[in-house]
Amino acid sequence: MNKITKETNNWTEDQPIVAINNVHKYFGELEVLKGISMNIMKGEVICIIGPSGSGKSTLIRCINALNDINSGSICVQGQEVHSDHLDKLELRKKVGMVFQQYNLFPHKTALENVMMAPVQVLKQDPKVVRERALRLIKKVRLEGREDSYPGELSGGQQQRVAIARSLAMEPDIILFDEVTAALDPETVKEVLVTIKELAEDGMTCILVTHEMGFAKEVADHIYFTDKGVIVESGSPSEFFDNAKDPRTKEFLSQIL
Amino acid sequence: MDVFYNLFLSLYENTGINLTIIYDAYDRGRFIDGVYSTIWLSLSCLFFSLIIGLVGAWLQGSKFSFTKRIVQIYIQLFRNTPPLVQMYFFFFGVGALLPVVEGEFGIPEPMISAFSWAVISLAFFAGAFNVEIFRSGIEAVPKATIEAAEALGYSRTQAYIYIVLPLAFRVCLPSLTNNMVNLVKTTTLAYAIAVPELLYVSNQIWSDNSNVPEMMIVLLLVYFVLVGILVWGMSSWEKKLKLPGYGV
Ligand SMILES: Nc1ncnc2c1ncn2[C@@H]1O[C@H](COP(=O)(O)OP(=O)(O)O)[C@@H](O)[C@H]1O
Ligand SMILES: [Mg+2]
Image (cartoon, rainbow over all chains, first blue to last red; front, side):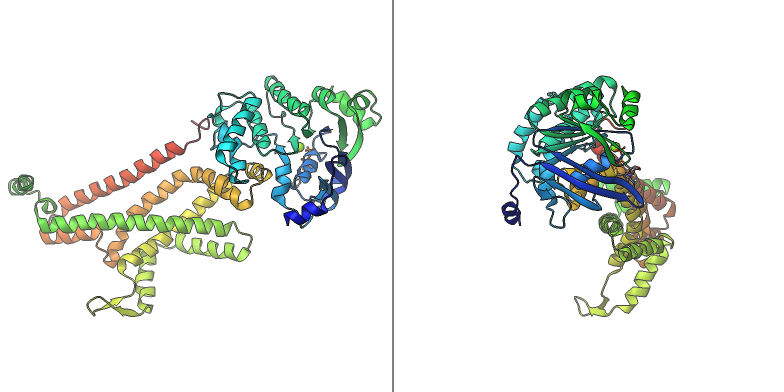
């Protein structure tokens, strides 16, 4: 199975790592995504912004198949995500995700949270995984908190463990869904610094965020969505300084 | 030891407090057998009721509506009828339908012993409550936590084994302890189908010696200690599993 997909998949790095094409998604009667298209290249940092309820979470959850779609296509490294032949594990090895509410496993320590999936899912050698996990915990500046349980960590610390947990799977792409929205203003920065470092290391990042300053500084491309459509997109300077659509202007005037 | 036994014999001669289960070898023997029988009965019932609870909760979470329906009917049947009636139903009702087999000495014996019927009926009785307890524990695990596991590549089954069940179990423990305590106390019903457990042997002893008040006190104390050990064990387990940083 794996062999066949590898042979038929002739994706190369000059093609989009994530290609979203005319995606429609309904929740019952409600059309949440109304024909979304975007192409994301390897190493790019994409920020998706827009009012609450505009379908941002739904969109990125479709990329790692946490949600399904009704029509259109999403390809990750040339492989169709919403097909009957999808190898979910392969997809989720490639695409990591960090959530607004961290969603750590509360019965495991920070280190165990980072180690669990590679050991239990990928069946990697615990010794090797442990080394990597310790390195990642250091990378997110949580050295010394390896043995703390999620309940003993602040929101910002938990979110950084969640980022390390996602990195431990060595993904090619990470999805961030409003990962600073639940944090105190003081701790937002520590998480953003971590994400920025990831972006500088060349990780492909797709972020849903309300942190405009961060988007301006780090994003290669910004998409503004409203009610299930992409209203406007462009580089940060195009977007922040030359927004054309009245909906974008209104949103920016409220938030800036 | 004889000194000790004689002490209780003279206690009887001097005060009338008659603890035959200490100084009389025969009574002592059957009382100890009764204690063992109660412990063994309790452990067997606990074990099978937990298995029934787990399987039931799993079937209830399945996508087939008929398995859900069957589990629901089972729960209603066993929760809404008295456990003594259930035990009679199994022992006299179902037991009578089963063939009689030849025992060790060629004497005809029922296929399933009274002890086994007690285990079966009590395990189903307590199991019905365990299904509900486990199910509420599983439902208490946030969907978002399961999603996080799925996003890390866990299959549904793996997420269940590594994340949902360990978390659900912690939620369940207090009500599970309650149900287990009730189960241990309910094992006295096996008296009614002549399983020689504590209550049954005590009854024999007080009939032979007319020492009802003494035996009543002994019975209460023994159950008090047995249940006390169970509760102590469960609450230290609960403490051990407590998630640091959550709750008080
Ligand atoms: N699982 C679901 N079932 C039904 N409706 C949903 C579900 N998830 C999201 N929605 C609806 O879809 C719309 C978009 O939600 P969401 O993608 O979460 O928006 P955003 O992340 O931009 O705030 C909202 O109207 C929301 O109520
Ligand atoms: Mg959202």
